[in-house]
Length: 439
Image (cartoon, rainbow, N blue to C red; front, side, top):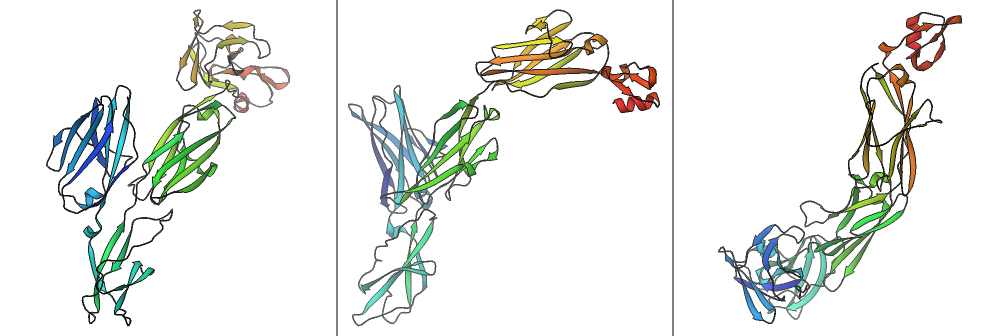
């Protein structure tokens, strides 16, 4: 069997500065990989502890209990506050699959630091003292307790979706009725980092123009995580709806963001990112999925290539997009775009014209057309690239213009000048002015 996933294991009431041993039972038949990881949150676990190992701080071992049952041991020497804020994960894998076993440690109440501060004792006829929970300057809960009690009453605090790490203080009873000061005992409400981010579907696929729905779910965070969306470095969070759900009984929250996005050809091959921010993160965490968009070749305006020297070898490079790839792609040329009887296959080379195609991936292509020894007659021709796939077809038109220095000018009757690109201009002034206007 593959390793069997379990819920998060919590170990509570761990005394500060003690040596503590975690014993984690799991089933796998048999594991070929068992190793511990640790870090401040489950999303980034780069620190590795081999099994078995002993570096003075961490000791690890693995016990085979028989019948595919195992016990992983992790011993931590001299528990510190920093250790309590650390999350641990046991990674187990065999040929059939893998699983992670997550561990959170909680400090014993009496290990929390004590705080000293002024406290005005209030007494009643039964010689009992009122204990008050404080959050900042606000009183949250009052309870009358007798003098011999030495602990604070239970705090009934409901964690809200925007709750961050806060410190609650409870004043302990004063040593004597004459005392005007009391010791504060502080309890830290430990925030819980998001344990998992799930984006569904794992890959976004569809035709251009389709409306796609993508979900990003952040599990068990305390307080709630915030979600935003990016596509090609642009923020598109305005297209999403966010919902925060309480996750009883541990007062954590699940954040669900649903994005509605209309697919465009330009989205093809891009990464859609779910950006998760939380007050336990040093920086936001980004989980990405790839977008695949299917579309017919995209029509473009006429491409003009200017300032081409006469008698030169010239290469036209035409970029276009198509997904899936075109199953028909060929060049045509003729005197005008309405009548193009001449076909040029791709690839081909007849000595005068050479053609080829380059695949730049993600639906991007470049068609090459190379013309050797351009003549005046070549500049009278128009060229057209025809591309088609299962979704449609389009044409890309090309016009070539001669370099100004290669033009020949011939005055005609009535001051008309025949020149650039066979245009006839009604000019009665100098040849220089004609050239200027023609340009």
